[in-house]
Length: 503
Ligand code: PLP
Image (cartoon, rainbow, N blue to C red):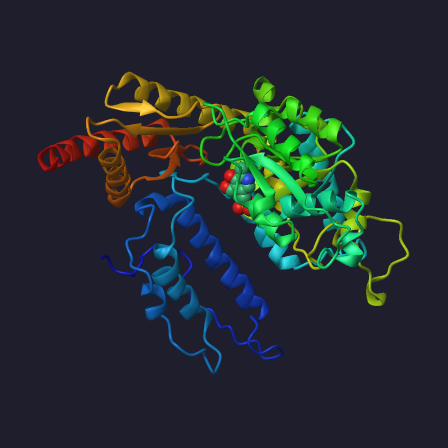
């Protein structure tokens, strides 16, 4: 196990006197300025030098808590001490999502302009629950969501707002779908009602777990979130959906929504959205499109085939915090009928009534208070421009195709799913029975990740363990990718002799 200590360089080291005589505990104006300069240096040093760390810190669970005082401080502590502890304890013991070698899950990059925006938003500490309590925040949010709508080629007629995560965006959409079913559930609930049939939702067996969480939160039940089989390309099978729908209707269920995914979590498969839109229209069901990951790729016109039909959805989610280089948390939800979202969620106590005819963002979801999330989206979009963002996404997809070609050219490995975007699933195919092969691949992931320069993840496809590399970090280069591939090859060779001797 390595040490907890970090030692990043920091330029501005003059002591910061945190003692504000008028506001004890807060930073006096000069101290605030000094602390912000120091923090700016820390961030810039971190961002430019993050690759000196292994992507995953080599610490055991519990190590951080063991290094912290067990009781809170009774009296004021100096900012210098906090920043020193940050450098010693926090920064080095973080999993470095910023690292160019981060290729696990879906990589994210809080790009520079986004970081600056986060600082400005923290300074404002605005709460745009009502237009009145955050006019700039409310209007910028609606405006940049509309910029993004235009960027991804969606027609006018969608209203966008920002949530923290896609999980929440999807929950809100499915709540609206439930409301539209006309069962007065908002007022009367579902329990103890003989007039409420079993409500059902449909998605593929590859759909993100956030759909199950929405189903359980909304009282629909995980079991009634029907996970329909997928084809060899991991896309929802329309015939299987039709069979499930027919069976459910015959059993007296009320189908209320279909969730189509463009870019599923394991393999980034694309469901047949246009066909699902036809079925949703025929059955009077809500269509929600989960583009949390791949939605960003629609800014590249040549990739729009994958999105055919999404313009017919009732709601669509995209996470700019995934693949548009915006710091977490930034999930854009577009709905065709914001009035319905309002009908689903709006509760206005006397102390929050207003006279203006405006959007009050508190009406569009569960949370009342909200931070100024649109500032970072605005600044990132302006800083890169549409062309800059397109260029990055194309580069990531090119690198993924390159990796897929290396895998296909090497008879010790096989691709285990198509590569429509920038995520590659594959596995080594040593000449052992399936179970041993799975152990081999699992060990391969552990060994590669223990090295430090890269972090790859895994998934299970058709019951078999696979490696999964996703390219989405702004600083990932061809050289990083070659490093990953070399490590995978070297460890596969070593494991071959170990497993060969043992089996
Ligand atoms: N949908 C898809 C397709 C995802 O891949 C993910 C997360 O990776 C989510 C939804 C959930 O995203 P969030 O973490 O923003 O809730």
